[in-house]
Image 1 (tube, rainbow, N blue to C red):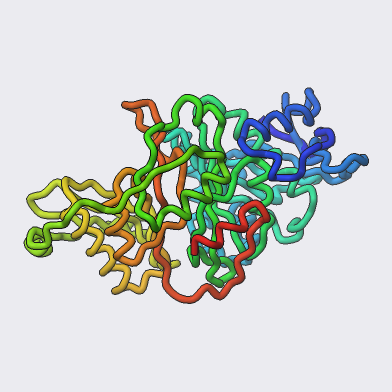
Image 2 (cartoon, helix red, strand yellow):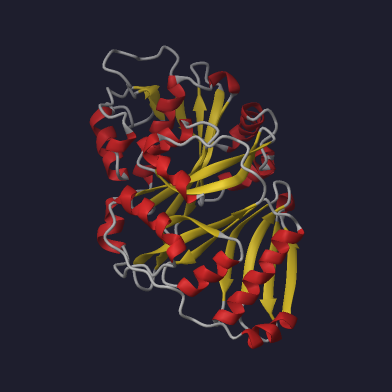
Length: 409
């Protein structure tokens, strides 16, 4: 399916605050897109942003990507970021070709009236957790700031939501804070500010903060939402209150950490920690800390190019094991002066939250419905903790509805 931006009627709601969930965005778009426009294609002229006729003579057409487009996608990333994009896999034809063959990735391209590729988009689809990662929006420099790009981006999200409405119920992305353009577009599409990620990324060779934005189908809350209230340490309450206000949550309860750590056992475990390192494609490091003769381990990915840690996963049998493993990753962060690290923790493990907090990580967002528990048929909430080094030198700009997120720093 493709989209032509010239065939959508007036959008009555351009205020993101009027779109609370993805369902609201879909209803708005269903009322606005000409009925015949999504049979074969949709362009930026399908989406009219004002009451007057603003059909552009040079619409941007959204189309499915094919293997013949691989080199052009690389060219787009190099042009859009002046060859400074920190994730070099997106400047690699083999990587893009492989993702095009993988159903967990969905690429779209944008073409102008000369049938030239001027931009691209990719979603990463986590079917297990029914979660989609939206991102890799890139347009060549000469198209930045055009209204047609805004409309094409809106059309892109419409396509993704419609195509995967029975498989993906939660959509998320990380938006830059050097400006608010991508935040605004995401929020208009029902993807709302949820957490702040200080000093996480690198754009045009400058360190920038980002915000995590997440959108939900209403059915997630009605049918799959865990009803047990979270159990939080006091330091997490500001994060919860922000999300509560954004998504209209019920009351909560929390308690102080009651579990005691056996430090004599911890001392014994310190000598049993071992490490394995696997160097992956594009110099990513998969690092595993594990306790000999135990089933406990902690795995994470380290990106030395931009000096960040992501995707920390752990499996432990007791609180002492968790303490030892978190202490070990904290040593790694100090040794390599890691600029940014993040970890998601359960909302019913206050003792784990307290350990991570005391190791210098801070709660920066209460994330609803992050992991899907297939056995219980429910989504489980998480608290996003992160740790950053250095001063925040790049100004942090936040759209109006997310302004209070700055208080989570």
